[in-house]
Image (cartoon, rainbow, N blue to C red):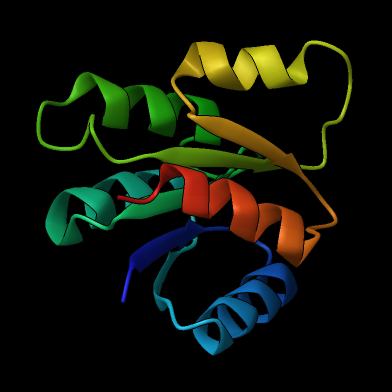
Length: 120
């Protein structure tokens, strides 16, 4: 069972996506801001991180940069989750260190395919 860290500040999005992922067989933990996400990733070493980009305390861009800069977490794949679907947003996520990018609203089959490509 793959361990997923969902970093999402919106309670409705967090609850809906975590329930859907658990039904797919994933073990899901959550963090509600970027700093909590970085701390949780360092403590629990998830198999993959789903990172909202618009977060309080530490935004998803900076949280991802910190994860990718740290030897103990740099190998954990990160998928950016964002409502930003403008030209250049995908490249900005990749430049921050994200391994992939998905837009909200989340289409679960599309997200699951991206997750499966990145999971060991």
